[in-house]
Length: 379
View 1 (cartoon, rainbow, N blue to C red):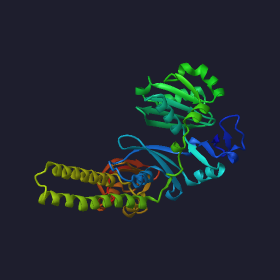
View 2 (view 1 turned 180 degrees about the vertical axis):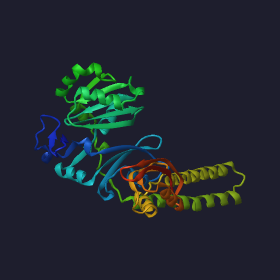
View 3 (view 1 turned 60 degrees about the horizontal axis):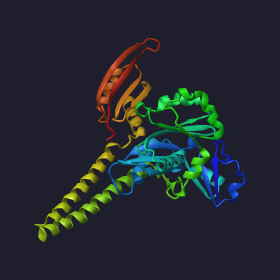
View 4 (view 1 turned 30 degrees about the vertical axis):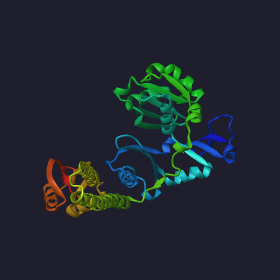
């Protein structure tokens, strides 16, 4: 027996179907549970072309994307095409709380249900709106893969949905099929607003139906493959050790053996030459993956603040500090001697290409407003 349930934002377990009694979780062998989408962070990331264990690389990505404590964070993932991965990230205590609320549970998000529905229906590209009690999610699929997922909290309205769709759905998907999944009683509310919703909905399906027909245990989340973050330092170490182990073991064992055998015994055979070429190509791929990992390592903000404090001391009033992805910095603030600040930064090996782009006298504080930019090197 299966029970189709949901957990609302207040932590209450509710039946999806009216005929399912609230006591059902105690009596069912398998409970199919829809999680509150607002408690789960969904990210789409790209990985280097490494075909082995990807979890250490995912941990490294999450450490730079998600603000939560690593020890209190869990994640699950699904592989997409072309090295892309969809991540499902949550607080550990939230998932453990849901497991305590519903025994024998298989957890689902709209993505799992909608993706299977589209696949079974033969629909490749579509805009899907999953409308629930106190949140709704807009998902955009292109050729079977998710490209956009945005959740909106609070009780929605068709007019609010029309405005949110304009902000989420790009022009290239305005002519795509638009499917709305909602409860039967909510469908009537869309009638008066249909003319303002774009893309124009061409199909309405009930949440009950999509849940009943598309919830499979093998598509559930946060079950057997749930992983716990081990912290940024551990993630970096694990990723580097993984690539180093693959690099050295593969290079030393396979390449040397095959090259020596080809040189001594099978020097004239084209098949051996081809195998050596393939091994070198795989070695190049591993090297490129390692270089890409090092190139995109996150900047340690505490080290940056420490180096600025060592150069500045306590004199300037820093009002804004911006660090972009290519390590360019911009510092806005007030100081009695902006040129002296820049000179102190130039003495440090951590900063280069420094420039004072603006100096304005602040008569009220007897200081000068300044804007200083440059490049930060964390090594």
